[in-house]
Amino acid sequence: MDPDLSRLDAFLEEAGVDGYLIDADSTDSDQYYLSGFDAPDPFVTLYDGSVHLLFARSLEYGRAKREARAESIERDVDYGYGDLAEAYGPEEARDRVLAAFLDAHGVGSVVTPPRFPLRTADGLREQGVEVTAEDSGVVTEIRATKTEEEVEYVREAQRANEAAMHRAEELIAGADVDGDGQLAHDGEVLTSERVKEAIEVELLRHGCALDETIVACGADAADPHDRGSGALLAGEPVIIDIFPQSKATKYHADMTRTFCAGAPDETVREWYELTAEAKQAALDAVEPGATGATVHDAVCDVYEEAGLPTLRSDETAETGFIHSTGHGVGLDVHELPRLAPDGGELCPGQVVTVEPGLYDPAVGGVRIEDIVVVTEDGHENLTDYEERLVV
Image 1 (cartoon, helix red, strand yellow):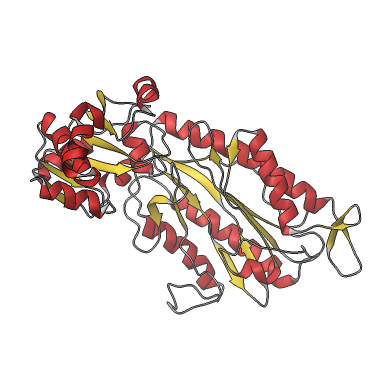
Image 2 (image 1 turned 90 degrees about the vertical axis):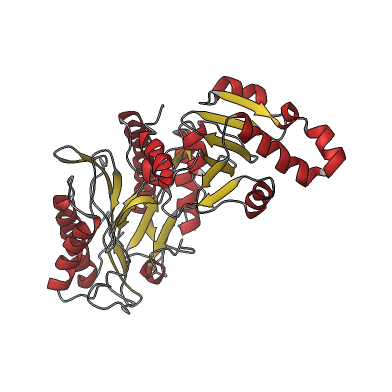
C-alpha cells in the first residue's frame, strides 16, 4: 500500500522545514504508515519527499531492505557509530550519527509529531539541527482518509469480527438459567471471561487478535468502558464490543451488539429501540461534507426528544448518552475523524464507527455499533450483522 503523502509535502513546504522525523517502533501507527515497516524496536524515519530509514542496530536491516517502503535504508554503523561511541560515549554518538544522517540527506531542520522523544530532540538541537514539534498530527490526519486497499483491510477484519460476535451470541443464546438466575452451559456458569475466551479463539482462527474486549452485563454495562467480569445474568442486557486487529494488515474493525437471554424489562426494551433509532439517524447523516458534530447531534436529538439526558443537554450527566457517537478506525482502533461535538467535516474514504448508547447502573447499558466508510455520495455500511436484543 503506497499512501498519498502530497499533504505531507505541502505541510513541510508551508512550515518551511526540510523534513519530517519520527523516532518510534512500529506500534506507533504514524511510524508504521510512513515507513511501511513493522519492527518491535525504535527506529528513525525521515521524510523529505522520500522515505529514509535509520536503524540503531543491524538486526532489522536485511528484512527492512526487503519489506520497507523506503528509498534508502541505513544503520548507525554506516555513520561511524563505533568510533564516535569511543570518543563521545553512546548517547552523544547516537546524536552525532542522527545529525550526520540528516545532513547526508540535506536536512537541517525537521518537524516531529506532537509526541516525540525529548532526548532525541535535545540531542539533535545540540548538534545544530532545528527541531520543532507540530501540534496538528499531520500524518494522523492523512491516515484518516483510507485508500480502497485500506478499506478492504478494514472490511476483512470486520468479517472476522462478525464471526467472533456470532460465537459469543451462540453461547448466550444456548445457555440455560440456573437457580440463581445466572446463565450456564453444561452445569457451569457462563461468565464474561468465558465468552471473551471464545471470542479471542474465533478471532485467532480468522487471523485476528485483540488485547481486550468488552463483555459487560448488568451494572458493569452501565460503564461504557468496563470490560465486564463474572457471571452473565438472565434478563440483563449484555454489551459485547469487539475491536480486533488483523495480524496480516494491522487494520482494525469495531462492532458492538447488546444481547439479552430471557425477557428484559420494559426500560431495556425501550432503550434498545431508541438506540436503534438513534443509530439510524446518525447513519442517515453520514455523508461527505457533513461534520462529525452534525452526526453526533442527530443522536442527541433522538435521545433528548425521548426525555433522556445527554452530555449535550447536561455536561455533568452521569447517566443516559454519556460519550461521543463514534470515531475513526484504521491502524488504530480509535483515530480521526471524530463523531463528536468537535468533529470536523467528513470526507470520502474515512472509516468511522456509529455507536450510540444509554447507561444507568439501575438499568444496565445498551449500545449498538456499526462501522461505515464515507463514500462520494453517502456511506457504505461495512457491518453485516443482524441487530436483535433477545436471543
